[in-house]
Image 1 (tube, rainbow over the protein chains, first blue to last red):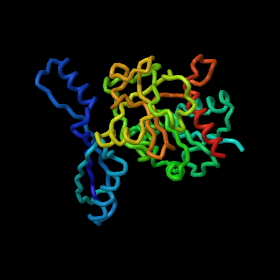
Image 2 (cartoon, rainbow over the protein chains, first blue to last red):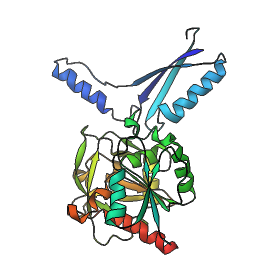
Image 3 (spheres, rainbow over the protein chains, first blue to last red):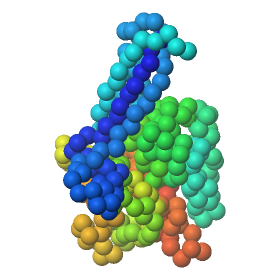
Image 4 (spheres, chains in turn cyan, blue):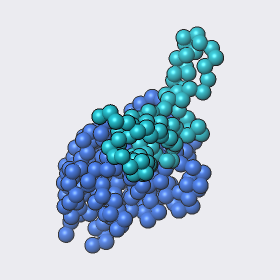
Length: 85
Length: 233
């Protein structure tokens, strides 16, 4: 079994309105030096197989077809073998 | 022979009944609902993907709806030349499913916007605009993610192939940034595919079809489809 953590990020060329809103909030709090806030998505799940190659393949397919839209987002992921259920 | 419309219903669709009402009660066309778990298109001649918040907009608007069983049938119907219109959330589903290029981002001003806008048809020869006699059309928008985005190459290809169907404009038809309600590239309000049989648009023509509501500019989109399909019979 593998524990998987996927991070989906908007491309840096694409405006992140959530990040902008947080930056605005920081200003309102009087925190002056916060810049370039980006809100990303972190998705955790398990892949139930002992075959690392198969696990990688399934994660890449899920990321490319559902979790991220390649027009505006990039993704990266980490696989970690685990015995936990 | 008559023309039959199908309105796809996803969990979270909320303009499905508006579209059904406009087509059947206002325009008198044959129309049926198509549940997203079905794959039978019931011999419909034109399909409407309605507005709403399919699957709660989880992940991204339209990202999960594109995986509904009915979408396999919608995609193969469209690829065979079948007429498909996505309105608002339906437009987002068409983009996510790859039937149209680009993506809809969060509105540049970050607010949900719900008001009437004016849209000018750039392409008057489309099967979706051929019956338009006077423009611009006054139709409502209601969305948080309507900011059309595509890379330069895609935008150029949309222009070169006459795929930009509607642009946000002034009441006089002037296309300028100040009449752009959401930050869309090139003031895009609606585009079609290269083949011209799939339309996606953010404004809601179904909400401006009933004379009882005193606004009827939107009905011409459905009338155009109807007349073009009747002429093919």
